[in-house]
Length: 395
Image (tube, rainbow, N blue to C red; front, side, top):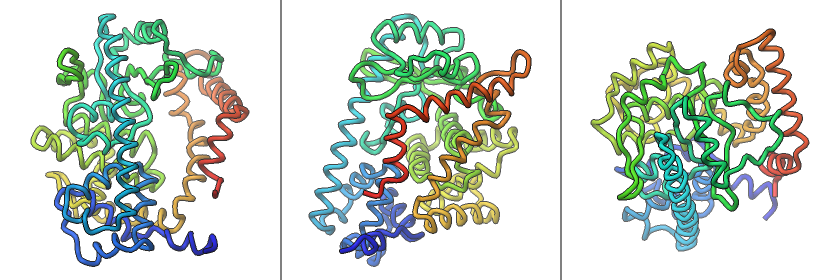
């Protein structure tokens, strides 16, 4: 079989997204036609490709195993999904241990810790089982006055920043988190945050609001930290993916984040005050972002919240634009998206978020620092290898 035939065989369509939503949803109200697509390789390969791209293979395996569908799919597909689920689970277990270790160090130093995003989900039940969630790092929220002490505590216990050029590092006095740290043979990076979001997004969710409403989270029977209130977890998840990561602006449908939001909503249910969620986006004049992502969750997973607007024309158009962009490019738009993200990094507000707004000509000097950092990355062999493999290697 030639390469053209292989590529045609795994073409992802709008229906692939809908099928993924069906198999990942709790109700799994599928049709016989959808089931038949799981039974033929030429039809289930696009679904597997979409799951892999969005780090949802573990969740797909777990969801299918819970239903009668599992015994009806080919053994080859069963074996593949089971092996990937095992890999996801082992990684999540190792990340749990890394979170316990780092949080223990900080608590012993009398530093209050709140787990953010995926790190919290591995312990609060939103990722159930934990192989449903694939993570690249651990985000810890630290009180701003304790950030330097927190970095010192981890460094004194074997954590390092692999980039040892201090002039290149984004400084913590301007950025919302310190440079990432990792220990020898560590499973992932630790990011110590003084703010949950960049300054430009503080109208959506302010850090002092988070601390005021945080709730306990048990990591072990003997170790307790904090987590965001469920309402704030929803707000942060949307703001992070749709605004900080520019998914809304770039017309990018982030299926992994949609599933994470769906899982949060199902896990916390009535603990989430959706009118408060709406209020936070209203005060930032960003309700179109909220309504669009809630419409996407409705279309993919069938979840309707008290503030979902299923008749919102703009939300409908945005959803279809996102799907259309992905299916037309089959993900190749992500290469352009990478360069767009780099370019956007030189915009005024981004420079202020990263480097601050103090001194003479802060924007000019901030852009010079940012350019120097990109030059450094560009000529780092590890970065070049990773970028080429991710974006241009067809093997």
